[in-house]
Image (tube, rainbow over all chains, first blue to last red; front, side, top):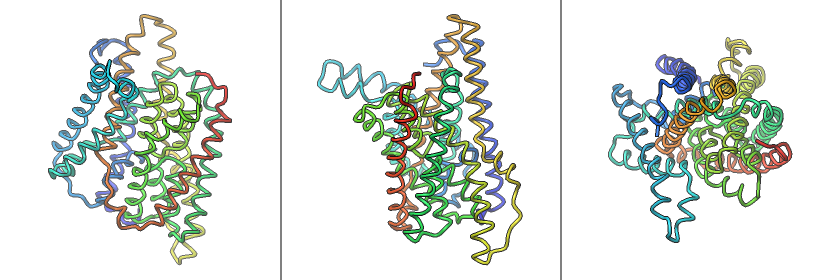
Length: 44
Length: 381
């Protein structure tokens, strides 16, 4: 947008990393579930 | 939805673009509110049908799925927090986009990869036809209603592709004003909320199968979190197909952003006397706008499919845990939709954009229904 301030630009960068964060958190949780790091029955 | 990530947050935040920043612990408390409401949702999901058993309300109680509790609790929480003046402080924790994307990555582990491969053809075809037709129709209609070109671009992108995410991508491409984005974002959520409940009801009325229902929902509801909520109300199969179809549409956001950037740079800006500005390359724009969670979704599906083949029954416990985590993230996203909802910016923009959005939504519903029925006829999960 044309009125984006430096703070807003910084926020946009953070949002991009939030995108990747969702991928990483999702895959790490999947891996932890599969190898038993998160015990079966722990998550209701 | 790359920066869509911004989406529902912007939907809320955009209504107050210059909202003051609050210390990080308020965001943490906001996450606590989301988790608490998610826990209440999970409790109600089992407690209500049990309590209603043997009464005249047993049928209704069983039919109400967890997304309904989550969205309603979110809206109630929103009203309560707004009344107490805490909502804006806690809003940093209402991260709908992060929750829904993490949930969708985990959802990949519950979708066999061959289902994705099988659904990819009709999903891509539906996305191409639906996005192109709905975009062009909305663009044309916005012109007939005398809307500003930039607002037309935002409305057309949001209603045809993926809601607030697409509006944000388009806003960057066409240099839209912040209030135009805030307005579009609010409009998207305003239409998405009733759609969550309306489409499953229409699915039953029309007698669609799970795949058709998922394709219709995925092709119509603008916001990804609302697509997942609506799909989950219909059932697991519909949720899977809706997610695949919506993800496919999300991928097209980059293409739309490139096209809009080019159109506004070469047609609109010179016509309005504006100077051409330095722009990133189309390849860079495509990658920036590419929804990265789709990669996570695909990887999770491959990993889970291989795991199920190698570990067999012994590996099922791990997959069940991943599915339970998926449900928690999805519920957190659905709750956040309710917590983030605002109508403030809608009051100032008048009825014309609402009229355009409403007519475009009906057009989307009809074209999407025809495509879903044709392309997903006989599709088995």
